[in-house]
Amino acid sequence: INSFAYSMALSICPTMVEHFSKKDMDGYRGDISMATRNVTFIILPCAVGLISIRVPFVRAIYLQGNFAESDVPIMANVLALYCVGMIGYSVRQIMLQGFYAVKETKTPVKINIFILCLNMVLTYLFSKLWEGNGIAIAYSTAGICSVILQTFFLRRKVGRINGKEIKESILKCSICCA
Image (cartoon, rainbow, N blue to C red; front, side, top):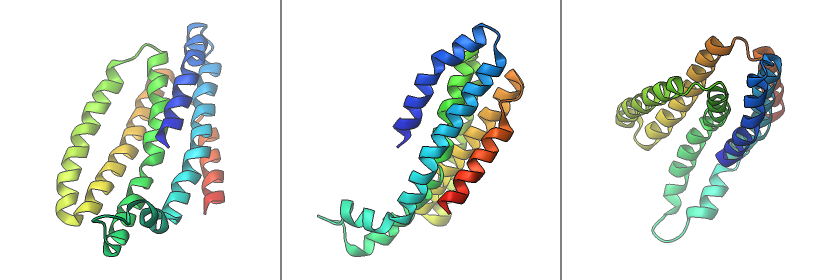
């Protein structure tokens, strides 16, 4: 599912570069906003849908060989917790391309190194508390932190990025998914 976000981010990057090089910041911001809203429009319902069908999905995919019926709810919970982070990791792809379009590569690398370290620490701590679920919680938490940090630093670099438009779209999509 994240490949959709990656494809969207790569396809919008040349347009962002063009808008930025022509000093069309409204166009650049519009590109980020549109891509973020489109990715959210696809990924959020996919994540909610996958959470909704997690038990039959896991049963259909994994209930064979050494995988027992008693393993299904455990794996289904892990899948649901991973799904929570899908939106963070997906929107992160858009923000990364936003940095690259303005020829800023150091900030995303620093953020990604921090997120990698955060993920390792959280995985260690959370796996002690919640075992397999803890690993999924750590991964999802790191993904959400990643997009928050990237958005924060991108806004510092280029100014506003049509946040109100993005928030309204995410809210509408969330309501529809509920």
